Length: 125
Image (cartoon, rainbow, N blue to C red; front, side):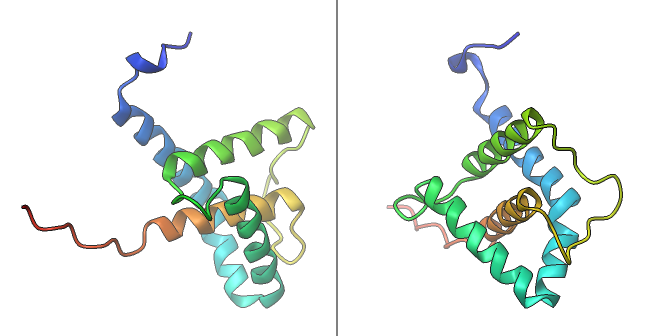
């Protein structure tokens, strides 16, 4: 059963989005980004996918958010399940990843970029 959006605690939504991205980081991001750092070809593919994700989320006109990236992740996973895609049972072979794993790795890279340095808060008026 779903609750109407106006009755959902915004903090819960943020926590759910962060949880989705944390799960993505642990299943794909950590090892995949390490592999990309060692494989220029994979890094180039991840960069291309990240650009496509940014474009689809209108990231050139507004800042990417945790919620947008988590929603995109869930959408990609749902579409993959509809096509009977299943994640690899063992370690991922980053020497030859499929399109979907590369796309998810790109989302993990974008999510990691959100954790970068933030501007200092403005002083009170």
